[in-house]
Image (cartoon, rainbow, N blue to C red; front, side, top):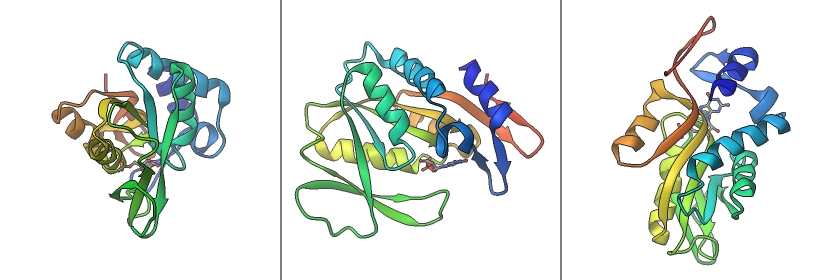
Length: 190
Ligand code: 5GP
């Protein structure tokens, strides 16, 4: 998505440690007009796939996932983060290693909201090593749900998570894929 690449070049800031800061439109302040554009683009890619639910992880994926759900006319479910795996009720849970915080955390979703008949579109703000999305994939597998595909607003292709998921046969659609970046330049995959 050309508009996403332009937005990243205009507003993104590359921080040490391979982090791209996009607080002006995606991670702290949300550019709501642009959110709608992103959501329309993602929804357009998966419109004919019979998606029954969009799923993400709190907190940074919620805005974009909800907007995609609105475009597709389906519910959005977000996995909650828990420090321990002690959760009550009937839930699916998985462990995710956080790239940005360098810690492990548990994600849980109630079995009431993820059903064996679901066809789930997994959405997140960033796809880096792919651990967050692999955690969501694990939850969908535990529920016996199908996964229509994965979509990230921004994929950091140089970390390899997106290509790993593609190699697993999963459809991955990212609005922009960054193949290299430093504090002077950002290169997108063509
Ligand atoms: P992964 O699990 O694919 O390594 O990382 C994905 C998660 O880490 C995303 O949900 C996102 O919140 C966070 N993340 C990874 N890389 C970046 C980055 O460069 N910038 C920001 N703002 N978040 C990132």
